[in-house]
Length: 436
Image 1 (cartoon, one colour):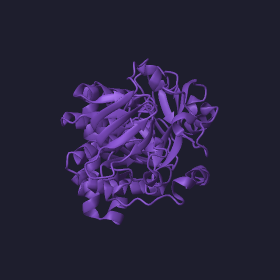
Image 2: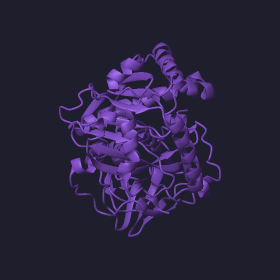
Image 3: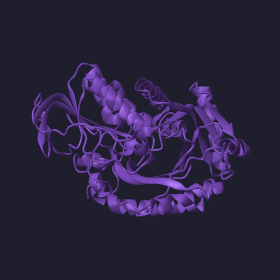
Image 4: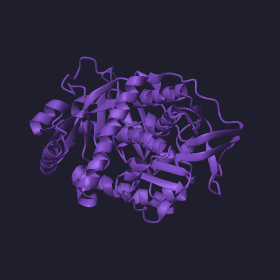
């Protein structure tokens, strides 16, 4: 089962609102014949494009091989949220890794936000401030309050405002939640526009990009200093270093990474433009996400379309009617939108790890990998590219901080990911519906 082809047409973006707004894209030429580079980057999403950009600005020759189109995967389909810190909160990090490591990881997460905003600005992509976190229970509300106080006191981060039920209802335009918080240091962006902008920056810096160039095999150098050979259907790229930036689309390129990174699908719909109707919905134009395992997340775009993600399925094939999968989740938050038309619906594949922290690894002496962002990838994937570029240049300390976070393989490894997905999504979907 190849997720690159299971749900999408070759060389085409999904039928998303983002792709419609971006319009036709000229694309890049596929790899033909033999080529040479200092660094081969496999994957044209945020991770790979950021790595290519930073490597090219260091003066290295870098070639990106993208199986479909730049930003084709999760980078061009996601909710666009640039969240703070890591996927796990600092109390989780402190209890398992210690206060010092938690602080280093938090600082890297904050650098990820700043880097993503800076690249968006350089590429001319607007960024809006604010992400609300909506809690379902009073215990979660209390935890959110404690975390806001902890971040302000111990991390110097005072951007999070705790909210009781009525306060959150004013921010969201919905009474569906018990309370939560508003993080004005977080932000959101048009995700495909960001990926396309990063591709422009990387190409301007001197990177070579080939799309429609699916990598079928990597032959790592057998001896120190020997180049790797990266094979596609129509060409071979020889490179001194290889960067794996495939996330949920890694397939069989590296079994050890695949054993720790599980692809899962998620689904998004977009409403028609709301115009002046429903002014209570997100009046501050912030984004939002809730505390479900299968997270609901949403934002208004510049046309005041509500872009809403949520819903789980227990197979890797997208459902025939994505509208029907997501609509109940949208209406559970905004009952007032029951008669509003949904104009776009699309699915995408992201990747999670057992501990919900990204997995940084060295699959071979001259190969680096980063993936498994677990829904927190807009900023962290962009930073991962920079950290791998640093490591290629011989400064691996910050990459090693991320790589030192222990990540266990899924039970059964890559071979049992599909049946594990079925069981896991059924269980967590039930938990979400029961409210615990």
